[in-house]
Image (cartoon, rainbow over all chains, first blue to last red; front, side, top):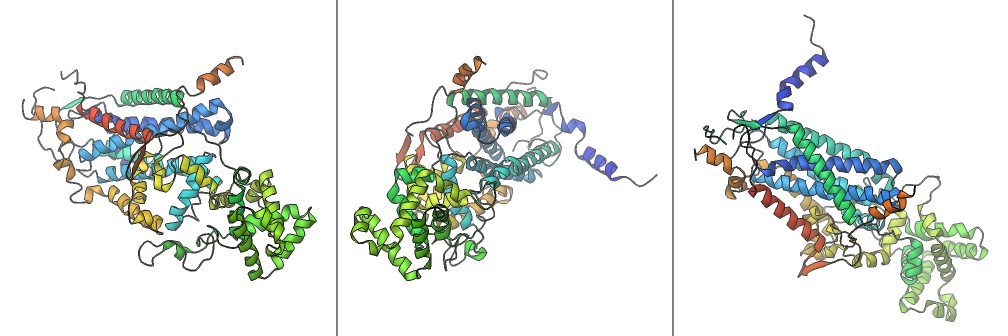
Length: 196
Length: 320
Length: 61
């Protein structure tokens, strides 16, 4: 038999880690019986609403929502979607903390969730910075002092609108999406943590 | 839940071998997405979103000319916020916040975004109308060729006159005290009120612009922007980091970050930003590493919310 | 095209939250009413999520 291909190796490892019944199960352990369990899915739903509304705003450009009531409406969806995203994420976090959900080799699941929270804060922050209104001016003027004190203010310049817009629309959502994706795959890999 | 015996205290590292229940993942995800979409659209329709217009230099110069002129003079004589800031904007020995003792990342990294406040905010913008205004061109030449000490004497005198509130009268009585300052400041005020200074602060030698650093630094050196922020409870001392304009919810998730600024010693410290960043960096790392921190990771057992979450399981497991 | 003005009207806020901001102030503690509502709502929703009964599995009944 000829040597295994890279593709074959990737497929074998993928299937070993995520057989289809584990990736898309239609049963779950009987102890998964509380409304607290839906908050991960609600967080993901809010994230998708934020992405979609952001994409609509991107269609017409960042100044659209200041001059169009339809634009303002999609900006409102983007803002309230973000409020709901953090709302559901924190309730999800409280639930997972009190379940000690990091047990049984699930520390990385906890860690990816925690880092997602922190990167989401940065994403929301760049969003506030790129609104092009009074809020953006004030937040930038204030935040520069903290970032300068930490030594990163010149490299991550909150007064540089172009830079902040690209971080907000491209780099940070990609990072959040990758972190959430990894987080969900880890949940599927290890399964839902059993009771204490 | 039927009375099948449940594994008690199952090893969380092993695959669950006990009873299962039906679970429709795709259906749950779809319902979650539809529910969140409807809720978001409802909130957007009910409450919309805030959009307080940005402040322009023209507005500032019109609403608060004294504050505008005081700021411009301070940029000239090197006493403004930016001029005394130190890294990353200006070279000022010893400036830059310390995390602990004399340790300052800010100082270590030095000036990365160099700004000459006098040139950036006053002299370079004025060179534009000076091309067609001989009086202004002469005043600029006199100022730029004067010795530093003479420049300081003029700026100090003008700043003092501004502070007394009757600068026009004082200039008329003793014009020699102020040198070219009255012409420079009068032209700068006119340029600002017309909107020309807004454009000059953003423009460079390239056509397209996306960087508002100079304009925002100049605005925040004055008090006008801050006075508007105070009305909206956006100052650091007002837990401002968490707040939004009007009655909109803000960034409640920043509660711990803004909390430190409200309490001593940080509320009166010159190094508050650096110190609080360091504290939040440590706490963020701890948050990520909760599974490894003894004491913190034991809290779920000590505060047994889990007994409520899994109450059905425990009932079934005990055979009740 | 004639539907657009009424759509724009529909899309304006029903409950405008602009205007004089309302705050709860006690000593050094200061929070906006809006943020307080959000935080209290999170606590209430968390409590409800834990306390409300979850539908049993119909097949295992």
